[in-house]
Image (cartoon, rainbow, N blue to C red; front, side, top):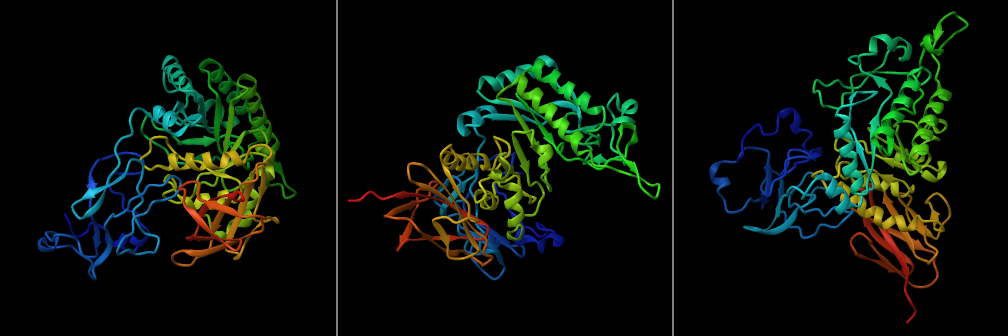
Length: 496
């Protein structure tokens, strides 16, 4: 049914930047098996005669007209529909997990997603090959390692995950909730000064409650935090810890635990307890790996990379809420390239839709030998499946003995334009995996030509879709959009 006011006036001007989701309320819930045949969005209400027409047609009032006439769902790359009318060149429907193109009244249509079979655990293990499960809602108070569930139920949850061959670790942050029984007694000594309230409160008892005041790593809270984590790890058979922002040495002027100093004018100033923060990470790393040699210390810190404190971790998770753009490439090269620091780095993304699969993040990460971390295992969007497929393709090229050839160093692969960057991995067997990213802001696609300074004849294929790319006179030809990427597998052609 078409009606006026479906898009409020104050939002209509942003319509070219919005996403219309068919068959779901958001990226994670509400699946339906509806078949969508034609999609039309108009700038005005349609009357009964127009709606009764046999097929939606294009006229001056049409903002979007999509016949959903696609036929493919490749892994790792978007299989977009091709709308007859759209507001931007890269528009088109993106089929998500479980979508299929089916015969419909007006040609082809799309059957929207249905609920994946079984639990998220089954789906994660059987269909995605995941190795770790992170629990975000396991404690009652933020920053206090007290169980939301009874110890017996908590252990049974972990045992079920272990039976599937996954490791289980928990979310934490160094803060204490004002509702915690020990808040009034200890916070004056534990807390940051000035007091820093961390993020958003929630009145839902079972929610991951962010309503907490940040503590300082230089305070006795570190002793409580490490001891509590070790207790839960041993009693519940945890496999590791996820720390949200714990690597940041926050400015603190709390003299109760030794922070701050008096300047030459007699004013009390704060200090950054970087060595205390490093010591806290070191202790947590030791507790984890002494009890679980194959455990994981996973740290999340955006907007900065403090190597002295992140030295004692297994992986860095960064980039949340940070704007990505080609202008940031020099910074990304320093902060995200794992070979600069020796610690694997993954990014989360930065747009309001960062929980959806977005190939733009892969464009920035692949050319720096870094990765994108997907979200929940059974989300409506198939970010997990696409991400798993990309990793399956590139991981064999990151094994010992392989060679890394970044775009900022001499290599056999030479882009003919500065707006297309090429990095590559080479294996001892003689084949290469190229990561090609385009940052040309032209509308539509950019013709990318890459000179192959290699001896012999070579074959170029897309390992995600099996598409064969053209090579003419040692020049590889690709077409890419803005912030787009292609993986290209180069194999030497045997002599006849």
